[in-house]
Image 1 (cartoon, rainbow, N blue to C red):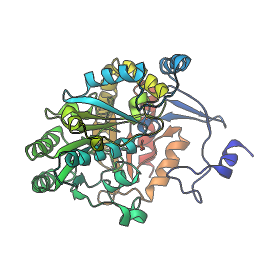
Image 2: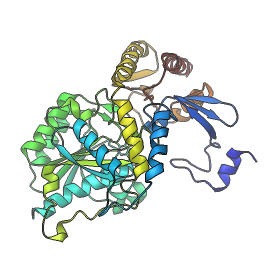
Image 3: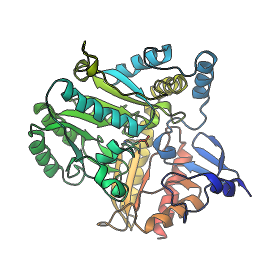
Image 4: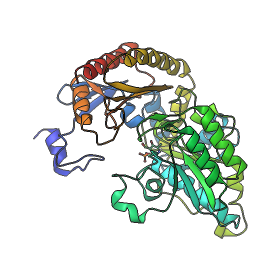
Length: 420
Ligand SMILES: Cc1ncc(COP(=O)(O)O)c(C=O)c1O
């Protein structure tokens, strides 16, 4: 048996129908934007391996930072103890996050960053003795796979088996689909005395189909929440660390959220880590001589020193990446022009390093669209990892992608779409 067949014996893969999906590609080496498989194939990683990779695979500076960290400290309990790299990284992050964000809570994945954000918001009101529990979220949102993050995500096939167990949420029409209606509904629900918090993906709703909306709309959404004293939670798990062209999507607005969830690109895509960052307004509501007001949340690996060492090295690289990010955006803008005149394509859109469009079906875009597998296979056969969301195709490359590699991705898309 080869590795791929052996994999099948014991491994249950995420988001994979193990009955019908093909054997996985087994990747034995990854470098820059490229993945190499054990059967001598190579792929351009045009979606940054589920949106995590920023500077290319196996970047030596991140590897060296992890190795250096391992010489002195690996992992320790993070309650009652701390360590230098966690402290230094928190200082670095606070400097670049919106000014009101002052406190950093570590965890290890995007769903958990969201759970922590929701719990912070709800307990904030509880600690202030104000009984509020209603959460507002957006249709087409995706915030993760744990119960709290599923509750605030678009309900559908992913959440159906658990429907009865998810808490009630007020869903607003997506601002990417009808900004006016979204703002109107937000105004109404924000005024409800029961409303505790509003959670949203700023500017780009990722897994919901790379739906994009304008900073002016986000600004108005934040203004409504501020005026009505609704805690705002920006889920920047995907949009953070340069994806939308600025360091954080929240930087496009003058009003800042109260809580920001970060993960994915935080370590440059090398080790798991997440941060839920919040303002002093939120944090101060947990300060008390009454221990019952403590934030009772934590995980065994909270504040992992190796992950944070990777994050620190990644952030240093990111601070020198603006030119690369702008270059990708310029190339995307040019390609958008070509896409627009191609048949079979609708809703072309770009924000920062993310380009997306829908194939053929203007009205019926869906994760389960029958075209999805056809597209996916055609891209992989051409050596490009794109993994469309149904009939929505998107590119979200690592910032290190070369001009030649990006051109090849564009050419492959043109070819595949033309041949449908
Ligand atoms: C906006 C957003 N929030 C949360 C998550 C969940 O992150 P994770 O897969 O690390 O749990 C994702 C993952 O795609 C995401 O895009």
